[in-house]
Length: 190
Image (cartoon, rainbow, N blue to C red; front, side, top):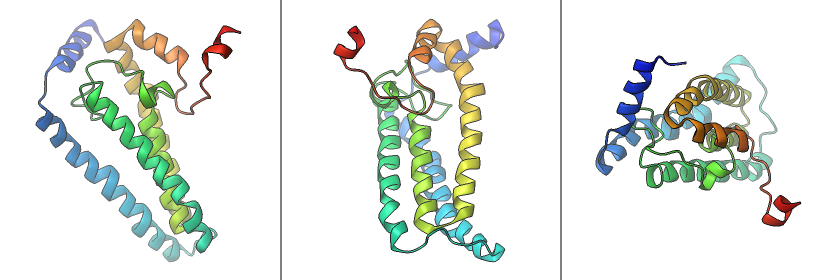
């Protein structure tokens, strides 16, 4: 738990207004890291490591090229949707230095609390499947484990401090990572 003084500083910091240009500029290093550096590592570097270590390819061939798009495309789209919603509805970015100004509970955030993380996980698994690389899949699992630990132990506490009861209620109703089927109005009344 943050001290009272730390909480006040956090709240003041999140109220700072940023221009659209400033928000877009924050996306550049994050985009380079998450959309270029990590995929390059997953698709080129780690498969090379597999052959150096003598690790077998995982079902490499046409099967990988058929299955991988079922991970790559939805993973990218779900992540991109999450970023767009943070920018448009939350008036911020996924980058901790310019966080959303309001709690987002619509769009992909109505399915789970960490849709961007889920999308990135699915996207990165797609690269591992595409290349048939055990190292890429292992790296993806390790990377996502660390990211999920950050979400659970740091980000969730910060969101509770910033949004209070509103976030606590949202957390009670919305799964952490794995979406569940949303009930329609007739099922809710039963």
